[in-house]
Image (tube, rainbow, N blue to C red; front, side):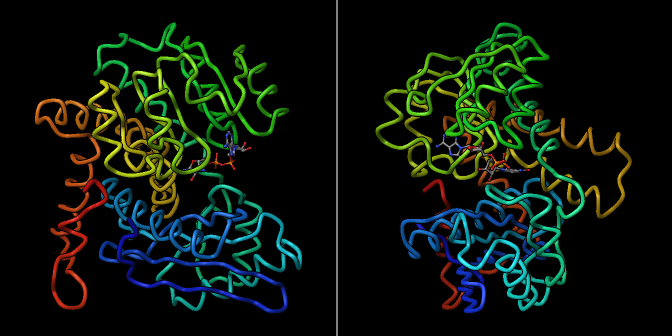
Length: 352
Ligand code: NAD
């Protein structure tokens, strides 16, 4: 399902060869904040669809986290832009500037703080061009995992709990370190074998082959890489009791949330668990003291536990509980349906 998008921009720059998409999903709560994903896609259609879905996820995340941003996302459709990386990023910044401040680019898979610094040369507003938000994201995911393990009765703490981290890049490597500090047994998988080996060594953990991730024996599966790793085929092979990670848009289809619940697998929606990055952006902009930022990041744990408890109590999925809460925030802020007035995507949210 592709959600309705407030503004969709296809960007082509002849000089640099850049092809990119900017999806501004919703600006009810503020300018649309969301990362730039840089990845080779099988087709432009696939990139547009993914960008729109990810932009909606940002709307829900930013609403629930109360950070005063709307939701947006961008994708640059090449892992290695034909005219060079810097030229493509500068061209992208010019397109972002043309949105007149409605879209604020940030880091995402495939882009770094250094890349955002280049985007900032031409864009009017950029987040994450000074400090990497990934450690903050990892603190929030760690809090969500701890809460999920406790709330589900799996264990009183992470001591001895087996956690598999899929993707040990900016967020995953820091998450692995935090988990190991708490005594968890950490398994790591990454398509970059050297990176996986390095992180496993650092946390005294073990490496799992990327293609064996879904069926690997573990208590907690923490997807911290690509989107939609849990699809119809994966779900029956999952051996984890808890699914919580940083990766956006983890479920191939929202109905899989019900299948996870039916199999007794606790799932904290990605846009709840991975809000640390956007909270960090708000903290920097408003110069929060470190203690306030830390409290807001740890609050992701409380929110995750509450959502799991409410879902169990009400007999619905955690995804439905989290989406309802996020849409309620948007409604309170006066969000209106598009066009003919039919409340299409409010009646058919992602969890439909
Ligand atoms: P990253 O690019 O730094 O790391 C991703 C890692 O995953 C890399 O090491 C890559 O080699 C690996 N990888 C890619 N495909 C894989 C696969 N199929 N199997 C195993 N490993 C694979 O990205 P990141 O910044 O750490 O973000 C990770 C995820 O978290 C993304 O989905 C991103 O959208 C999400 N996220 C990140 C932040 C943040 O603050 N960085 C905030 C919110 C959400």
